[in-house]
Image (tube, rainbow over all chains, first blue to last red):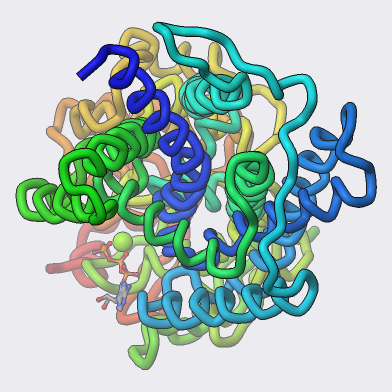
Length: 292
Length: 235
Ligand SMILES: Nc1ncnc2c1ncn2[C@@H]1O[C@H](COP(=O)(O)OP(=O)(O)OP(=O)(O)O)[C@@H](O)[C@H]1O
Ligand SMILES: [Mg+2]
């Protein structure tokens, strides 16, 4: 196999990986800190995509239109996250998983129908922002600038996120909330507000990745469920609640998917499911997680 | 004069099992008051009720005259009550310094106690500042949990069984430190099973039995009258 071909596969895998990372990191953060498994997280991603499309329609797809639309989508999904957390999630903390599962699944259905109602069932698409529409030659392949941008954004967010968690006051409070919510509350911290903040941040990331994916993938109903399944696999591989675990889990997922298609053509998801099964047997808590 | 803290006839329960049956007590500014009583009489439950960690089923908790029963714990903490739990509850994966830092951020109360002041009170913590909380000895954890609560500059310190499970020499040090705190004007409500630690510090005592107050009076009374002490606290 030619080196240029391998390189293209690696880059394709990384692109998938970085989208997955943006989504799965929020899922993993919400689970790690609040102990709630949020199935509706994929719906936030879908809403991000539709809202970005909507924003581009309003603002025209030229110049800064795409970036403003992306910001609009991410912020709107963040605000929606705040409302959903304040109104509904509050009562889920500490409840049995079954309640959480039923509630967040109901949310998936409601948001899915709302999207169909607002934007129909036709495929929608958004063109690549002009500034990143070209490509550059690397190893005899042409890599679209937009892909390179996505591949850069993942590690940037991973590094920034882990620095915030490990080095800042708010990061320390978040880690303490994860370890012992009640004690932190008794020391005077408004843990409810910290939870809301984390949920908004996770929703913002989901909305952001939904918006950023639009120049690469068309927007269709069902993209919410498709992505949440993949994000779950990533989180299981990397370890629930582990930030870097989610990052490396995404990279592994992306690359296994990218190369798995070559080995088992026609069974694109087979290789990742096989990988997840093996990890669940050998290390049920994931590669970077800890036994619960 | 209203007392700094006045508990009025509180009842409390864990689910269906009732634990407190009408506890009333007062703590004045500058005092060290001790709750004495055997295992399971309700000392911790009384403190948790003050702190908002458990909502009393009836009765009032008056802080400077205002009823705070039913407030959330962080609101109680920001009002000036600091809780040092008996199980210490150190954030095991945070360093000593991080444990102290978040406590200051959590309570948002500036005052006499900051990182230098608590390091001065417990010099060992300065040496250990980069060690993870989970790797401290029992005595070190006890110092850290007190220091952590002090970072919030509480006007009243609820100190739950600080001497529990510690070696006699460590208890001796802790007693010294707590005395120092008291001398610096920190008001303390202490819960203890052991008479030695508590009587060495307390101005007044309340003796609890099965969720009620059996006896209350000056600590000196119990210190001097061993017959009374035996009658109230015999195991
Ligand atoms: N979380 C809980 N759920 C149910 N019952 C509890 C709980 N915590 C304490 N109890 C019960 O409440 C009663 C009072 O407990 P509490 O912890 O207040 O006593 P204590 O005086 O602090 O005892 P100790 O000296 O052992 O700390 C005990 O009978 C105990 O078994
Ligand atoms: Mg107790």
